[in-house]
Length: 109
Image (cartoon, rainbow, N blue to C red; front, side, top):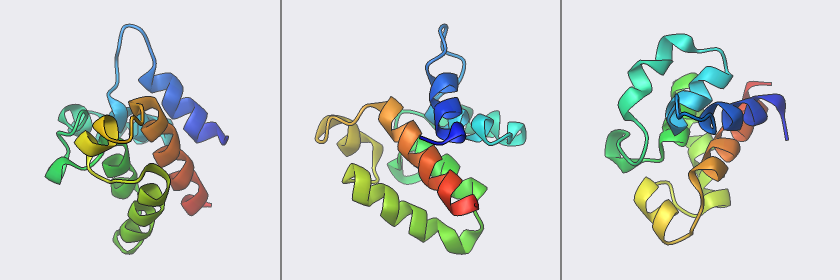
C-alpha cells in the first residue's frame, strides 16, 4: 500500500473522529484548502450520493482524468454511490478511503 493511502486511512480512523472519508483523502494529499469544503461530503452526502472518498479524489485530479478514477474505483468496489457500497457490497468506509487514495496516488505519479 502506498504512503498516501495509509495516511488517508490513519486520518479517517482518528479517535475522536476529526475527518470524514472525503476530508481524509484530501488531507493525505496535503490539500488542506479542500478539507473544510469537504466537511459535508461524507456518508453519501457528496454530490449525487457518490462515495465521499472518491469525490475527494476526483477533485484532486485534472477534470479529464475523473472518469478514469471513477471507473477504476467502481471496478474495485462494485458501485460508485455511497449507500449501495455500504449496504450491498459491505465495503467499509475505511476500505473506500484506502482504495480511492491508492488509485489517486497511482494516477498522480
